[in-house]
Image 1 (cartoon, rainbow, N blue to C red):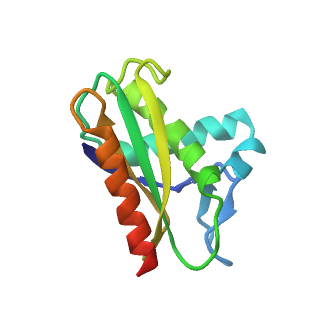
Image 2: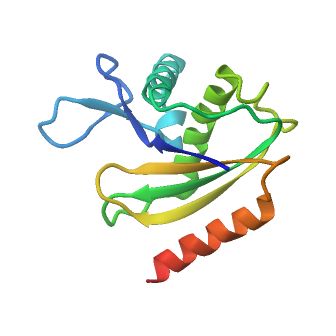
Length: 160
């Protein structure tokens, strides 16, 4: 099992359309990785956000090649605002799967190599929202056991 932390927004710099401000009075613009934003964005801004996502992850990217995989995504959010889990995970997953292909971790992100995803809510966090991704190699890892344990961990954490 391999792990990596993924952002739920990327700083866009000069690409100001289809972005939101961090806070009132803050001039820094971000592209929120969310299906609601994604569906209303132009292909130009989606591509720019994808590039910014890759640039941000590339610094910490040290995953090894796998034959087939399953990814478990655990979303951690700041504050009390409720979020639609799959609105966030779907776009993070799209950008991350493209990055896996680009870095030759898997040959393609179709179902022959990318067997599926599991989306979980992990709870509140300090700082910006993020997604903890667990990359499971289906030929080496005991996927059902690991997924069951991750589900138990997130449920037990929320009940405390």
